[in-house]
Amino acid sequence: MRLQIVSCVAVALVALAQGGPAAAQGSPADALCPRAVPKLAAFNDAKASNDMAKIAVAVRAIADAYELCASEAQVTKGVAVEPTVNYDKTRAAQYLVVEGRALAAGGNPADAIAALKKARHLADDVAIWQPESQAWHASATTGGPGPDSGAAAPGAPPASAGGGNEAHRNTDRGGSRYKDAAVEIRAAADMELKKLEPPAH
Image (cartoon, rainbow, N blue to C red; front, side, top):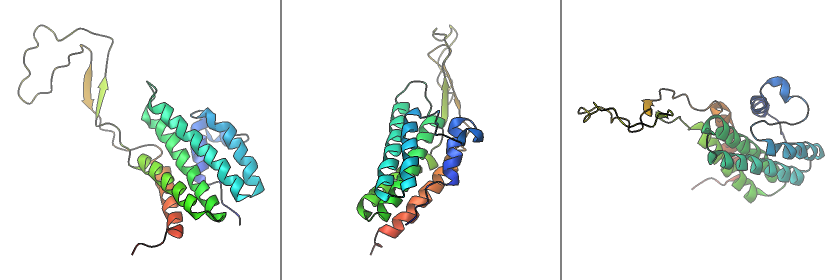
């Protein structure tokens, strides 16, 4: 059974990570998650064999690499959720769908369902993600409020206690740049799950 591996979503995500469509040609590369590169190369070898078991192992290794990149990015100071964490989650979800398809084709529906549900969860995280409604900016100034800063007027926002710190409402509600890809991956996971899970009574 031939398994469809590469999609337009995968090509677009690789191009974004590498900085342009030209970089998507040739050997694997990923500037946002370099640890995934050797796993991507191994996957190229596995898919050439058309062996579902080998493909499932190879794509799970890629998904694990992207999940690790996402976890590390989330706890690294100065690394924003958008684009880095959302990109890593989207890529992990993409390969988990491929793993689910390979496991199903290889006669392992239980593990396929588990992979697809995880893919759906990660893709959904990105699909529904929104920037913080309030953005904070801190300057190097550390002085307190000025001498004329008395009590705030009723209904007024509290005065900043950090000298140069300020908050403002973030009007960007467009979601992640990977939202469309995540929605497509989520739909693919749902479609595969419908094939594998018995209908609820």
